Length: 310
Image 1 (cartoon, rainbow, N blue to C red):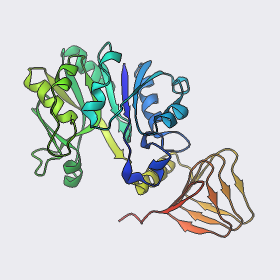
Image 2: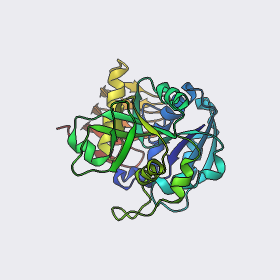
Image 3: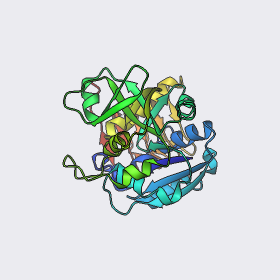
Image 4: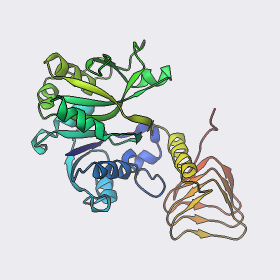
């Protein structure tokens, strides 16, 4: 069974977050979360519970019943945004078996993710955490550190460590037995963010004696936190697809338009003489005639300039 959390507000993504929940922001003409649903379908998961909150109706409208992605989706609402563990607590009545849990606002590139299930079943584990060896110290500080022995057995997890003792980073994919809900129910609010942190739930789970292992199955993870992250993700996937540009259906272009290394989504309208380089156009985006832009995101009613990569 699969679970995806898609309830957050994504305030750092403004102005997009006022109309587009982060998990359905467009990535090469597909909602970000669509890639996760396809990943789950590829693992043989057929039933997925999606936790919605902020603009939840937009998530439902974008993903529907899940048939386009090879799964069946059930939606559960998180009435208050009180952290990941709080979102997980909304699920107990809807989950009747072990479950994969994905954070819906992250793009994952995985390798041998099926190893998580293999280890879970063979080791009779309480959980498996998808991890990555992270050389970037600042990235470690923004995520959670996983302290494990040479066999991958986890002894401790630390949320946003100031001084990481390891380079093993938790990446937002988890596999848990149903007994994990016992730990979630006993998770207190933290002083750090006044939320219910999933890392606290995991530590309670460990302290209760459940065996949890770390699986180094994530090759790359990109948290889409700011507009420039969304642009960079689209350009990265465009490059990996060996396309110089991606043009969606129903796009209209005036005369003498130049489009270079850009992603133009369905129904965009580009005015005469516009020149675009490394740009992202949302579905229905409008580019005025004569506009010359580099590293810019266009929507139907806004234009967001993204600073160059350092």
